Image 1 (cartoon, rainbow, N blue to C red):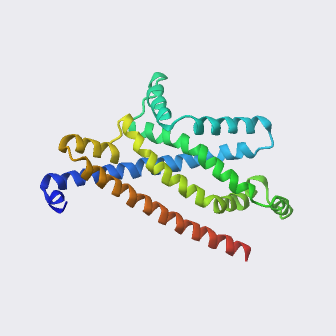
Image 2 (image 1 turned 90 degrees about the vertical axis):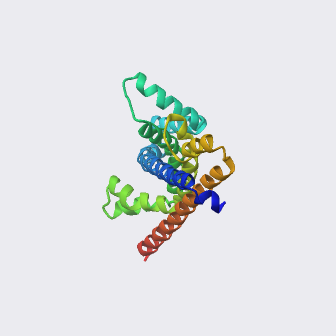
Image 3 (image 1 turned 135 degrees about the horizontal axis):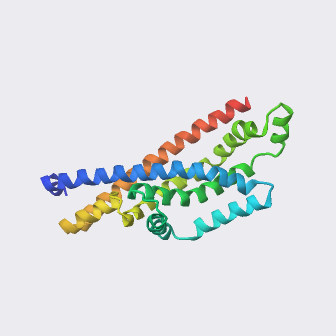
Amino acid sequence: MSDFLGSTSAAASVALLLIGAGMTIAVSAASILLGFVIAVPVCIARLSRFRVARWAGGVYVSFFRGVPLLVQLLVIYYALPSVGLELPSFFAAALGLAVCTAAYQAENLRGGFLVIPVGQVAAARAFGYRGAQIWRHILLPQALRASAPAIVNEMIAILKASSLVSVVGVADLTRVSQNIVARDLKPIQWYGLAALIYLVISLGVAALGRGSERRLGRGGLAAAL
């Protein structure tokens, strides 16, 4: 294995894998951030006292959790140009992942909101907080603390699911490893190395998530004190 990785061509292939890993991280991060932006209003709709809003939020969650992600990616990639919206493969892939993860993140956030005692809203109003201030300063921080483990799990799931973006032309880690295997005909070595890189990235995300949970926990303790 050391001789294999020590050759010039193998070193170049490892460099390509690392570039593909960078693309995987980029598309995953973009989709998670955009997905969170979408998830917040979807979650609010799911918690709304208005039936139409709850229905719309429920339809969104049911649709994007019920349709396979691969199908969603293909529909977005091929449907958008038909309505005159041409997106590069990276942005189409990030959008496809984002609208999917938003459904899961919205439900994770909703679970976080549901564990907050209802009396806190009345108490906040008694102290002069308005609706938007209550959401921003009281409800959302607590919901994030409660749902942080589930959100971290979703981040790791999207990182792994990002391997599907290769079908829409994104040169991610999976696509690069496939190209190298097609050239060198050494699937065990290259797919094994790709799997190891995925594992390292996932462990990094998990470590960052644990750090974020600790910081959120300290914030909650400080607020309580």
